[in-house]
Structures are given as C-alpha cells and as structure tokens.
Length: 546
Image (cartoon, rainbow, N blue to C red; front, side, top):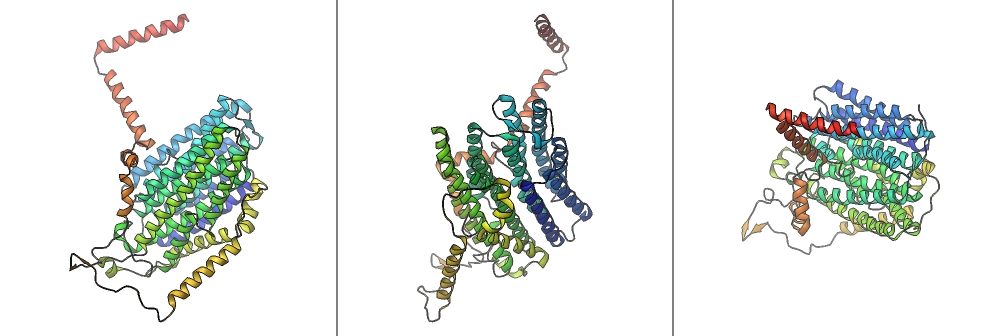
C-alpha cells in the first residue's frame, strides 16, 4: 500500500517543513480571525493527506487521498474574503474535474496490466490506449500544479484566499504533489517516447512565456505572484520532458526550489498587506526601511525565482538548460531538435521577463517613496512569527544555491534520478565569493567620504510649479502596461481578459449553450415531443436491424 524511496522521501520532508512554517506564520497572520479551529484542522489534514499521496503505492489509495486533498483545498480557500467562495468553487471544479481524468487513466492501466500497484507497472507508450492513460493522469497533475490551460484557479486563489493558504497550497504543496506524481508516472509507470517529449516541452515553454507575460501587467502583488507560480511550473515540465537525466534532475530540483522561494514571496506579500492594508502596487512604496527583514527576504526570493546566481533558482534552471542542450545531441529528428532550440530560447527569455517583473515589484513595494497617508500610519516590522518563516526560506534559497551540489543534489535529487553529467562548469563557491567581494567594494565606494554629488538637489516641479511628490508619485507599474500595445500582444491580452484562455469560463459557456439547446428542445409543445419520439424510434430501428 505504501512505499518509501529516494524520490518521495525528500518530498515528505518538504511537506513537513512547509506545514510547520505555515502554522507558525498563521499564528500571526490569522490572529483574531474566525473559525481558527477549523482552519488549523484543515491544515493538519492537508499535511496528512499530502504525506499519504507521496507514500501511496496503490492507485486506488492515491485516488482517494488525491480527491480528499481537493476537498481541503476548497475548504481552506473558502476561509478568505466574502468573494473567496466563488474562487473555491472554481478551484474545486477545475481540480476535481481533472480527477475524473485520473480515474479514467487508472481504469485503463488496470485493464492493461491487471494490477493497481504502482511499483509493478511499466508501460511503453506505443499505443493509443496507453497514451490515453498517460495523458489522462498527466492532465490531473497539470491541473494540480497549474499548467496552462488548467491554471486559471491559481491567480484567482492567490488574490482572494488567505495568504498562508496560498503559500501553503498553490505555491508549495500543490506544486510538489502535482509535479511529484507527474515525475513518478513519467519515470516509473510509463516509458516516454519522442512524441510525448516534444508535447511536454512545448507545453512547458508555452506555460513559461504565457504565465510571465500575464504577471508583468498585474497591479496586485498576490495576483502577480500567482501568475509567476504558473510560469515556474513550465520549467519543471520542460526539464522532465527532456528525458535527459540532468534535465529531469533539474526539473525535480526546480520543483523543490520553486516551493521554497514562492512560499517566501507569498509570506512577504502577506506581511506587506498586514502592515499597509493593501496589495495594490500603485499604493505602495518605500517599505524597505520600515520592514527590513521582509524586504531582504523578498529580495533574495525575487533574485532566486529570476534565476540570478548564486541562488537556488539559478542552479536548477541551469541544469534544465543543460538537459535541453544535451537533448540536441540525442534528438532523433529535425523536428525534435527544432523544438528543443525553441524551448531553450523560451526558457531563457522567460527568466529575463521574470527578472523585469520582480524589479517592478521590488521598486513598487519596497523602494520609491511612500504616500503621505502611508507615512503617517506606517508601522514597524511584522511580529517574529511572520518574518521568521520568510527569513528561513530566504536562507534556504542561498544555501540550496551556493551548496547545491553538496546538500540538495547529493541527498535529495541524485538518489532519485541517478548520476548525471554536467555539460558546463559552475563553481558556486568561487562565484559567490567574487559576487560578495564586488558588492563589498561597491558598498565601500559608496560610503567613502569626501565624494560630492554630481547633481544638484532641488524640489520636484512641473512646468515651473512645485508639486508634492508624495502625492504625485511615479510607481513605475504603468510602464509595464505598454507591452499591452505591442501588435498581436494587444489582441492576446484582450482575449485573456475576456476569459478566452480560461478553461473554466469556456466550460461554463459550453454548458450554458447545451442547456439552452435542451431548453429549446423541451419547449412543452406535444407535437415537438412526438417528432422526437418518432426520430428516436427510427434510429432504434436501424440499430436493431444492423
């Protein structure tokens, strides 16, 4: 029924860590809220179900716990604002609807193998039925993790649900479980072929670019982070989709890294919201001095998610890039090679856009200038039980980057994947030392006395008239909206705002259309019913005759 191995052992440790940090953070953030007993009960039940899913070696047991986790996700999201109920329903329909596909996939596997024990299943993707089983389970994993087009519940959840819930589930546990199961079926239950690899890499590349492009135009911190949570899943699927050991290791390592820095970012966003009462980037600014621990944690996590060395996000992305490059040497066709080149370009471009997006966030929230209203009511740093989880996760971003080979890869990733061969060379310790020296020299040069400013300081004015800069601030967020006016991007963004890429909204339209059609058929007129009965009898007659 249960199995402990190298792949799920470190996932269990991660579940325990994020559960503990979420409870600590919630002691501060959720203080004074209603239904706290239910809240903490749901958190504990979620952790227990997540551990059970990770250890499960029986597909029926896995299905039961997977469905139970969808229920606790619904209940936890519902504990947010008054509008969180609609988001919880949307989440339940998308994630729960994908569970039907998982049931279908499990049924096909049982019909083909006669067993439900995952450790006894090994299927070649050489037929339509086997491929259908793989795709069905993979789609359930994608819905849980947030791959496009099954992603739309995550940004909405990030905006409406309580911050600890978002940091715990969509940002960390759902990513861990979704990608863990996806890695399990891709590496153990099925044998991937070239066609599946191409499909996975394309899905990953599309998710990277689409997610980060939507994140860049957001003005709400939590919704911005929600779209980045979608974008980062693309790297994980891309790495596993290469089918190359170093790429697979990079995808699994990025799964762990993403949970660390994404939870840290949501916790810091919660700190900002707790102090200022808003998540609107246009209304924030200048919080670095008042909230230094939150700012440093957000800075480290932002650099990590952007793939800046020497943090952990860089190392896992670097491994994924190497997996793509190594895939060029083993690609069996020109199409496969072209897809790899395209995906490599998309992954690197996505990292650049991610960095640009977080420059926007850091400037709008922590740098710049406070409005007069905020400067009058600004408090100090949040309580220790809210900044401590941020600091711990930020420290892990540094440790898992500088000592990636010595700690996470050696003890967590490589035992599950096996030995890997690096194409390039990265000396993390030396590079970190050189970066630290450069920063120290820059700081010392900045602190040198006797340097005179090269520009004159004066009051801000427009057309010769002095203005109050605290009330007429430039946040920099509007600058990023200019990308919405770029040719085809304008059309795509307009479609996105209308829900064209939202499988939930499109599903509702389809269901309502079917309902209207059936309503038209059932109009209460007896001759109409007689006509349908006659047509049904004719069809039945031809079926019986055959």
